Image 1 (cartoon, one colour):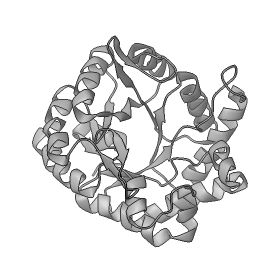
Image 2 (cartoon, one colour):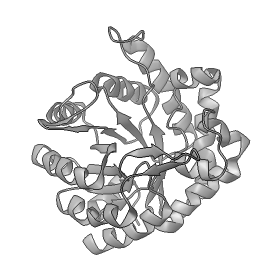
Image 3 (spheres, helix red, strand yellow):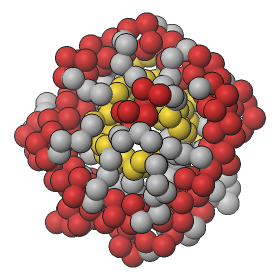
Image 4 (tube, one colour):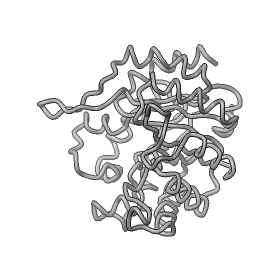
Length: 295
């Protein structure tokens, strides 16, 4: 049995989980409140979602801590609860983690900008991520995933902050938009800049999640594989979200169309595959079969 997720990665392809926020909403989560607060207020619901992904075939799931930095939690007046909310996120997920499976600590963007575009310094970002990483590590996650980053400089702050607080393997994913001239982050970072920087920093695993649908992710993974030998994560959205008249979020790419491109994403070089917004345990169960056939 693999001792760490990096050991398992040497043996075969790995399957992550899918969307979390949409699953919370299905269970009555009111939009505009703090998802991380449910780690303490409604742990049974959070655990149920984690278990549904493990049961669907995920080798690793991610904690309910995407917005768990002190800076992001400030908007809910919960910044002083950062350590506790992240530690609890990990602890409650571990309670339903099957033997031989793994748990990743989700570390999403702050939602703010560094100077001169915003008001925050790099030191403030590093401190915010360090506190989150400390909570997740003490809650006993198996690795940290700095995810959905749109600014390479913020990703580096997150990496430095996490390394101050943790010795765990760290994975980093950025979110890219598809333009006529290629793939770029919101802040204009290129795929090459991202990969070259992460290689220099000694990051274990790199990749992309969110924004792109599975068809667009095919091309991005191909480009990434040409530019790096590091293991690659790919977690595509189920297309673009839209709001119905009833206030329900729907995604533009149906399950059948989404799954159609997963084999090519793997063929093009993805080592860790999962879903992002709009995907659910049903997607993951079918992706599990695809991953098994590819390994």
